[in-house]
Length: 213
Ligand SMILES: [Zn+2]
Ligand SMILES: [Zn+2]
Image 1: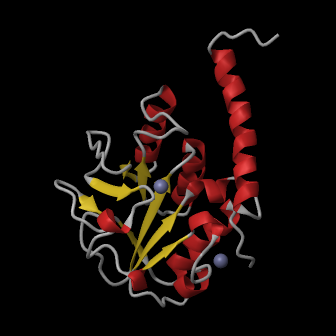
Image 2: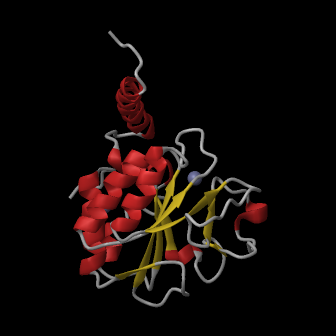
């Protein structure tokens, strides 16, 4: 098994957690031994989120999706954004808020759970009024946390440790764009995403009655 950032290996990761005896959990209760809190920060692409969300549903998994209200890359208020939230919920996932400091736009679209985008240390773990901050205790602890930031696992891909049940519990942060778009490096994955985005935007132009003849 090669630890590449692909939907195939993401599926391996889910199966590893299941064979390690873990069950899925969210941010509504303190993590108990034996749970994996699957967390996704959606920084760039709702299409990537939906692709990963489908793999999870196929594997009997569910997770918490953190969506941005002020992204320059996608518009959650567009018909696509509204449909993405509906699709995530219908697949059995939870939807929470990926906020850009200092603005918290919690509304009825979201569970009362917040993950800051690219947080600075000063506020990363600070309590947020009326919401759970995923990086505060008891949901975050360095020994119970792994992240795939920029296609780099600081402690290596966790699939083997999950299969062996080595974590007491784990918050596992993954970014769907890394897994849904092909690329051996972050640069290559981003080029794949931009190629797909161009095709999607051409379709939007057609739907907007733009003459492309
Ligand atoms: Zn792996
Ligand atoms: Zn982010």
